[in-house]
Image (cartoon, rainbow, N blue to C red; front, side, top):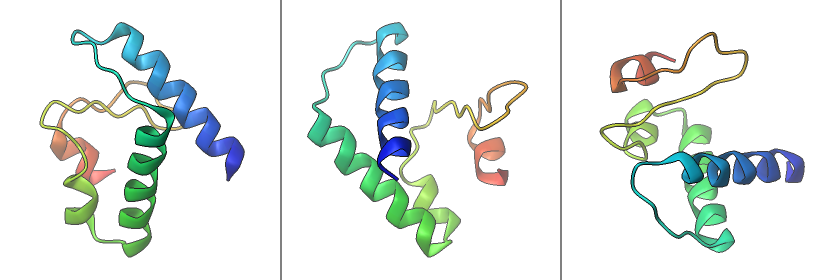
Length: 77
């Protein structure tokens, strides 16, 4: 699990470098966000998971041919 969290942290931080709007997030903030996401996924309730995604969210999933660029596709995933 630690390796997965590290991977996600690196991915999030790397993505932030290319974001149109810059923001500052501490490792603690990122860890807290990952904890909220993990707990939401464990419930299996899609509505709770989707509340964690912004309106303009983009999801890059494992072995993706292309990113999911709208909420409907993210929800279906």
